[in-house]
Image 1 (tube, rainbow, N blue to C red):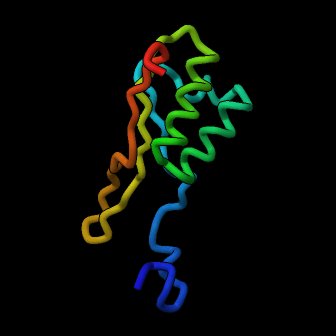
Image 2 (cartoon, helix red, strand yellow; image 1 turned 180 degrees about the vertical axis):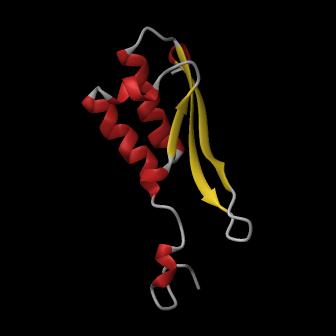
Length: 101
């Protein structure tokens, strides 16, 4: 059984994927979001944080900045139901260098 099976109420037991956070070392993600093409990639990356989507977002960021490399991470917020503590869990990360690809 998964949280999606067994009555349907399990789908409400996690924070929505839009709560996922993208972190790029040394850069302001909010400033990058102003670029609509990057914003769409970031939105999709939050939904499906995998290596393919990380690489696509990394390429777009590097193409729109003067950077040669990037360290991009996707974090998921979690809440411990026993003590109510809010934390984050690293879902996926990528070190991407323009000259290697």
